[in-house]
Length: 319
Image (cartoon, rainbow, N blue to C red; front, side, top):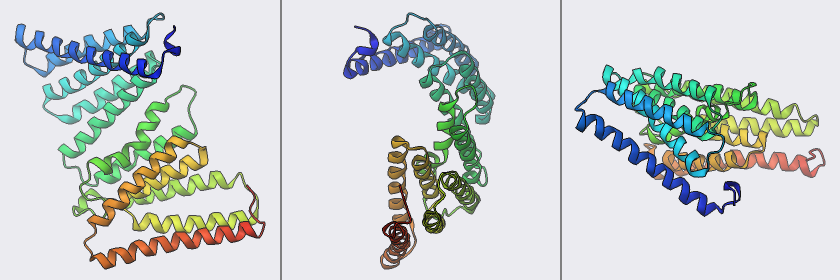
């Protein structure tokens, strides 16, 4: 039986086993260097990382590799990339050093390997070092800086270049909502004004309008245009009222609608639900005022829905 015809649970067991093997090999290499050879520097970690990265790439480039070998190669190469970036950053005692190194490694991986999982992990590593740098350096307007990745990711998803870099585009597109979820302590009005947020909202709203314009070009009916306008107004109001992460989630849902992507639609709904819940509990308002504000948002959305449905019943909107 070929690897493609294996049951999913067999693939899962084999994949987990390969990753566990890679982790064991990583710790074994570290033990040899630090215990046996008594090297205790970040540079030593980087040397181990280079070896792991080379070995992982060599494995996944073999034409006759099986499922286990493929997963082992991905895990080993990813561990090597992390060790090289982290080791050199530790050697320099500066987190930001890991950013250009991780970006360079990710670019090299995209050139020499077509494995999407490894490409995604390498891109995520570079993004992780960027976020770690912003946190460690207490960079002002960090939210707005992270938001700059969103238009790049969205453009690469909608206008992909000749070489497929979709994994990197996905990382860039999801960087802001994930950063807002796991890093930003307050999902609504961030108490530290230096973190920013309003520029991020403006970026998301501009991208939302761009997505709607792409959808609009596919329709010519005037009543549909009026419905889209009602939706635009309602969505922009919601973007202003919700936290920056909420506007990013709305952007992802709109992207999913325009492209017909079920996974992104599901992710967008989950993220939006998360941000609405955090928004509710983070507002420094009375329970009654919170309820009124959420009701106001709901009324805006219902009015927009009613306007669109009225046009549909009048026969002006066609699927």
